[in-house]
Image 1 (cartoon, rainbow, N blue to C red):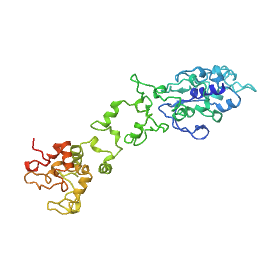
Image 2 (image 1 turned 45 degrees about the vertical axis):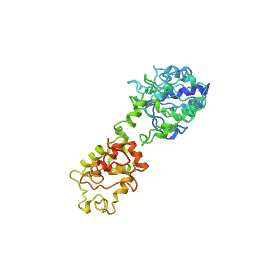
Image 3 (image 1 turned 90 degrees about the horizontal axis):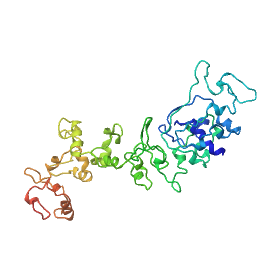
Image 4 (image 1 turned 45 degrees about the horizontal axis):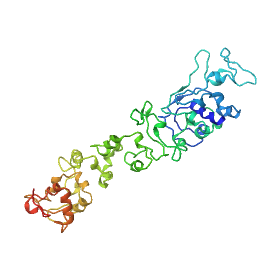
Length: 396
């Protein structure tokens, strides 16, 4: 019975989340409790759980309602009535001392007590959780709250963490359903916008900690068999990002514009999933002065300030090193150049150089035919005259 009721001690005196050190540090080493789940508290008390437990005081003596409590809203803090069972408290005698008896002076438990002002009250904010002590009555209290014999005043540091809950509520006989413990909205999704902040996974017990970079690199967590994404997100959340015009502002880190060139050249992530290269990218580059139009510092006429090295492109043959780069990552070219820049050379229009971007033997090849079947409009960007319509098809 002693172990059963000990669980209530912590809930009675703790709702919060700040990692501690020293004797008040969670002895289980589970420091991942959240200030959103356990809001800030005020405990103006002088009390030692360790001393009471060492004297053999059962937890039920102070927290009598813990064994029947079925809600996290229940106030399990001992009242003065419970304390009077051992302490000869007398409000008419605030300085009362009884030899051989536990302390009875008001100042012994209420630091800063003065007869001319009210005793400072304990303030605990109800946590946004659903929890039943009665349902966990067979669980040793130390398994959820740690060893209180090493703690003086129990604070939110001694409350169960997600990691400690997962020691039982994980695979096997205990099915994990987030809404069993967390508050849910009428539609069934968890309530994540709370007065004390936004609720989001912050521990690694289930591999879904929303740390830095999670917005981009969450595929592995999303495809795992026991993924919990649907507890907070519905399909519209995924579609808005994966199939939307633009990603949320927080998708890219701060000052991303200065480093985006690296990922843009790699194609990771694929910028075109959200941005149109021919409008978004080119428009920004031209406004910044590094595009092909408007005032810019990178002008090919002056080799000392040219963006591309000598021999990059030529109308008379030569190295034309841009060809290899264009085949490797045409997206990098599109960050500055529009299609009409390419068509000015790679086209059959009058006045164009009629330079073919295709390798020898391309016309009529299996690859040529496959691209034609997939998107004929792409071919018509360059092939505009009857003699240029290859692959055995006629203009339609």
